[in-house]
Image 1 (cartoon, rainbow, N blue to C red):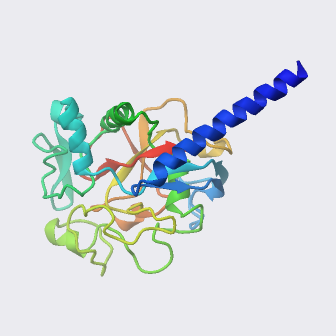
Image 2 (image 1 turned 90 degrees about the vertical axis):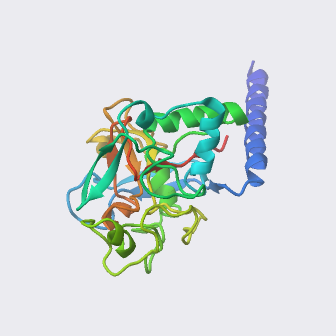
Image 3 (image 1 turned 180 degrees about the horizontal axis):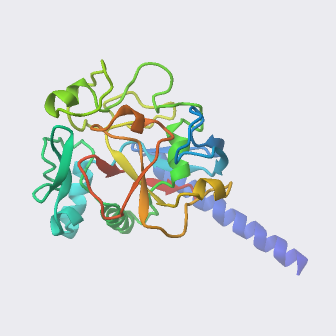
Amino acid sequence: MKNFMIILLIIIACVLTTASAEERAFFSGRTDMVLVKGGCFMMGDIFRDIPSSEKPVHEVCVDDFYIGKYEVTVEEFRKFINETGYRTEAETQDGCHSWIGEGKEEKIKEHNWSNPGFPQTPGDPVVCVSWSDAHNYIQWLNGREGRSYRLLTEAEWEYAARSGGKEYQYSWGPGAPSGNVADESAKEELSGLRIWEGYRDGYAYTSPVGSFMSNDLGISDMSGNVYEWVSDWQVNDYYSNSPRRNPEGPAKGKYKVLRGGAWDLQPDTARTTSRYWNEPGARAVCIGFRLAHPDK
């Protein structure tokens, strides 16, 4: 019996190793996915000693995973729409939250992923998509490619945004900003925005993915451009009770977490530890998503 168990463990180990090797071979030829080597880091607001949803700072360890180098683009999302005939929640319900001037926003029925109310190139990140829309896109992609794509967990997102858990307040690291946040360019089009004074990124709205310097891991737009849905539910005391290894968030909740800030939001939201949440059906001109894939 002892020898049988040893042989069984060896077989299982070989299967897992083969699966991981197969995944790495598949992704190694792709330029749109980055392998992030796992590790441990102090998650949460390590930069400011004030009460916030980013407290308490706590140690988290994550396994290796793949992350989309870029946010999902308009062109990629259009393929999903064309193949499936899927209609987003903005299209089937009452539109998408959009800016109307003087720092105010409201839901505009005509606005959706293909018509956000401002010009986009095929290479811009798709916006006006709900968490549920992102989930349906991922289900379609997995069926199409036979893979296991998913959204990032919140812990994976922060670990990757901080280039492997480094003490980076913004994904571009130390130094001058290099991202699409609310700036002088945006304020010229939309009065009333709270902006990064004196900074001009050259884009009033979204920018084509990869337009700015990537972080140390080669991942683009993790500070700014669009908020990114992650998989976690939001519960107020979760940071106090989060498991140390591979936390996946609470089992249920009312709101889903978003990370990374956006082109139209104050720079503070683009910090690597900043957190925001909304109902899974929420959609806005500043909300998109990014893919992840387990390394197994």
